[in-house]
Image (cartoon, rainbow, N blue to C red; front, side, top):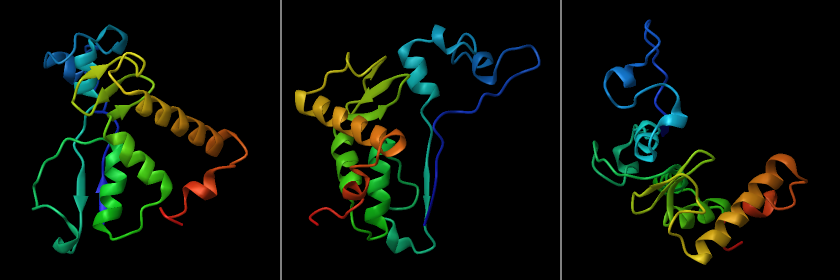
Amino acid sequence: MVVFFGDHRPNLFMTDGGTVYSHLGLCESNDCSRWSIEQVADLYSTDYLIWANDAALLKQPAGTKQDTGLTALGPAVLDAANMPRTRYWAMQERLSKALLVNTDLYCVTAQGVPYWNESDAALSDEDRELMNLRSAIVYDTYYGQRYATSAMNRPVGS
């Protein structure tokens, strides 16, 4: 099984200094600080493809489209491959019920509403607490002492 995805559409500059997207009227310039939140959400949305040589691994018919975020894509791939869910991916799946996208630039709620930041988004206190926990775990994994890394990589229930 192979998953193809990107985190944003590529910058396709034109010889006149514009981009393909500005020429198509999707945004007025390449300066994303001047874009509306809807333009950011649109231009940072990409399709993804899950390829499997064995069609039985795919849970839905070929060509099926579904709006989702990276937090839900990992668990979907694990399910398709019949792999156990780790605590980290269980946490990500739970977060995907609140947010499809959560980056430093913007976020999109599970209802598809974009916001410039998560503090403005309509989220429950539990969702915010879980986001803070995820941030702490990611920080510890990349920059800290990795106190939680091994525990988060264990299967759920172990």
